Image 1 (tube, one colour):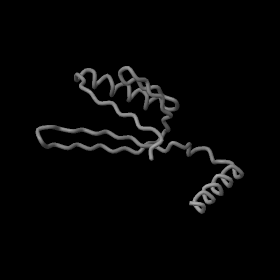
Image 2 (cartoon, helix red, strand yellow; image 1 turned 90 degrees about the vertical axis):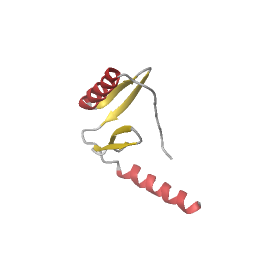
Image 3 (cartoon, one colour; image 1 turned 60 degrees about the horizontal axis):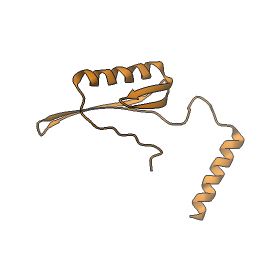
Length: 100
């Protein structure tokens, strides 16, 4: 199950598509807590310094599909969790698994 999924579909002019990509590039360049305006919606994301990426191009059925995907963990990887908090969390997960 996903924690959150945002999907927006619609038609754009070439200029509007370029504007969205420019806004995305600015948010990625800024990093940290970035605000990304997607038409009438503003999406706030925490963007780390390192990302995984995938670019996919499919040609067929009279169309070209271009997908650009960036992935990163939701948890901060730079700060180690405290020992007491981490131990409790793992223990609680084990207990929940055993009772199911």
